[in-house]
Length: 268
Image 1 (cartoon, rainbow, N blue to C red):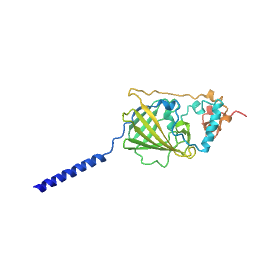
Image 2 (cartoon, rainbow, N blue to C red):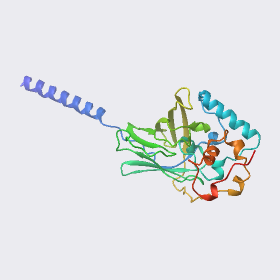
Image 3 (cartoon, rainbow, N blue to C red):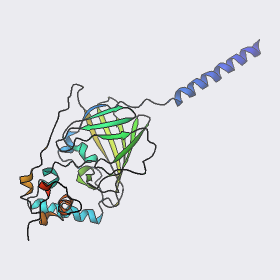
Image 4 (cartoon, rainbow, N blue to C red):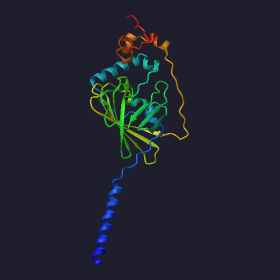
């Protein structure tokens, strides 16, 4: 009888251990990051990102040329005049809300900017980046959950995007992001690790933070019309080395096909 009691007790201990181990091994439920978000005020007011990126000599030279053009009055860029969106992580630093939606095996970021309204899609069902990617400003993103952290891998940029802080992102750019939610669910953190052999001398990791907007927040339709009159006032020849978009517009192999945008450089 005593032996039976001991056996029963041992079985109970084993069962309890199995239940405990099963409970500890149970996957954690992903965080709910859906909703409307706005980048924290400090970023769009010019707060410096820490640590600062280490640029390649080529990127440093390009920045100096752009700063010199800005000092001469080239403040509003050609991209702005043409209503072109920069795409990439820099897009989410604009003082404008964006909405995150999830379903059908993907997470979508819907932006509300007058120059770029294309959604950014993170594909959760793809385990690896596809062999053939159509280059785009936002790149191609795949993601997975590690507990309550969303990990996103992005490649396939068009060369017309930007990292945070206005650092150009080339076609070789690669970004890994880790999205996490604060305990109270009111702050979304995005820790980005960026590599780009053309523009970054070493991998750059920094964090952006966003505030959750009220559930009653609505998104608004926005539009932008190219300012052709402003474009015609630009000295394209003088700016082509300072702004890659100007060089692109002057290059017959890359400039838009719309006749209204085929603007010849001013004669020297």
